[in-house]
Length: 239
Image 1 (cartoon, rainbow, N blue to C red):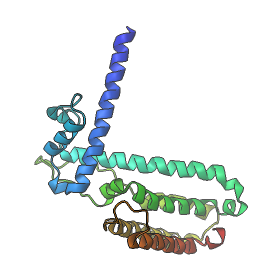
Image 2: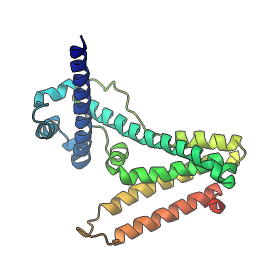
Image 3: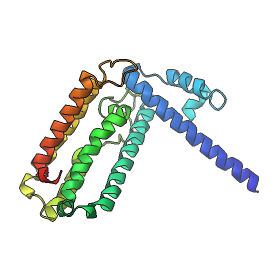
Image 4: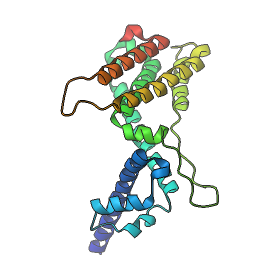
């Protein structure tokens, strides 16, 4: 009885690996081709090249019915990656906050700032996932019926509001300024990361570690935006 169970377990693992391969390859194709240029046929060819033995072009539709459903699941996967990083900064902050009495005094405000910094880092290190979440719109549905799959969203203001509510309860910030903080920092987060992506798209010197003009602009711009956010949160003295 043990052998069939092991085979089924391996089969489940293999299917999940193929599914993740489809999500990753699909994301690259969406980002490079856009929603209009993306086709399931091109994706199937790409997966077939990578997994010639495990995958057939017709088997793509056993995982996803159409490109709209695939787009939704790629977004869900991107959000999951983002959320896992958020959970890590929360855990790291809890471990390290006792090292600084000043940071402990403004726990929730500092945690909010760490969240802001993480968003910039995510947009840089996971650029394709960021683009998928904020710059690639849904493909047109192949069905005449309206899509029934709920589109997962990464709502920055919702999480920010929750953290600032805790900061208000702890009397770290004035509740009257909370909404202004959310919209001010949210605008800088989205605007700043978008501009960084545009700067990174400028061709760099091949095979060179030398810092280029776009690199300098990105670094200085981010430093300036984070400074303004610290000032808004009244955290200048904690850095």
